Length: 396
Ligand SMILES: [Fe+2]
Image (cartoon, rainbow, N blue to C red; front, side, top):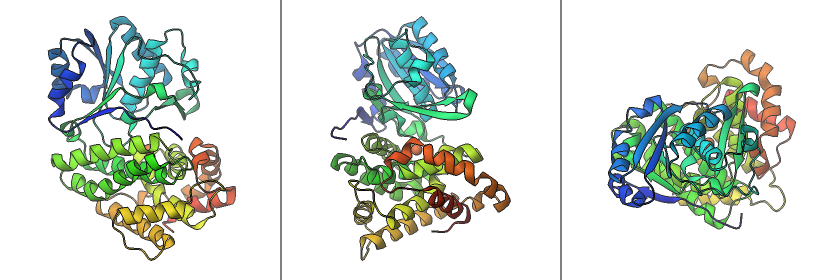
């Protein structure tokens, strides 16, 4: 992509106070969109927004599965309160629900169906009513820094993703203290999502020199700081570094794309009902092995060259790019063991008898996943079957 987008990023513990001066004088009403769990931790951000002379309205109806109906409901709240500032306070699902509600608030003539038909060429004319601030409380999705939204199509049990550059938040506010309450299992699985974003973004067909820089740094930060954030959740330096890694990866893949690990992970997530980060983490080493050992698509970046670059940046000594790819896979497996994340589906207790009947569905879902179009290598049906069996039994 011959362009580069990023929100204004405020990061670090001291930034919560500084945030007040960012929003002062920009309006008189603010709506905070959050969920019931995070609403209990919203007091510090509410106080800062109130001190900047906003009347604050809180809607805590978001949940883990942001659906179109939920976005419509949140947009009704926005239309009633009429804010000039919308803050999304929560994990990726909350931020996605809030982004979708923002679009419907700005464009009241649009229906839920119009919303999911938004594409990169749609002219939305956002920001006539409100600016959008993302305040992430997990370190994984990068939704605070991307121009995409993923919502659940409840009727058809599937996720729908759509993107438009106007949906990029104006500000993302990274306060490490807001992520300190994440349990270890969530820290670990969301951290694996960050690594998936970094490596997918680095090897996707749409990578550029600009996105590479972000993806490389996000990968390096995750290798160094994810084990520390998992070992001690109260370590605010580690929390801050992982928060940075997640947003940097979001900017990286937001200006490139997610690719094979996400195509495989989305299929695994919907068939076995796995959380997003865990399904990406379990697919990641196998997708790297696949793109390192199969011919690259013509005119796509050579994934082996990209993986060699990643290894050098991560300080891995390798004799060749092929050796680098193997060593990155080994390093990720070490990380997964250290943070107690599964290396394969068998580790999750999925038996061969449970796996084999699902193979055809997994192949169909992965083949039609939008991320497959970003894969640097073609992935045929038989190869997908083999890939999923490798993911099941832990074979790279
Ligand atoms: Fe992801």
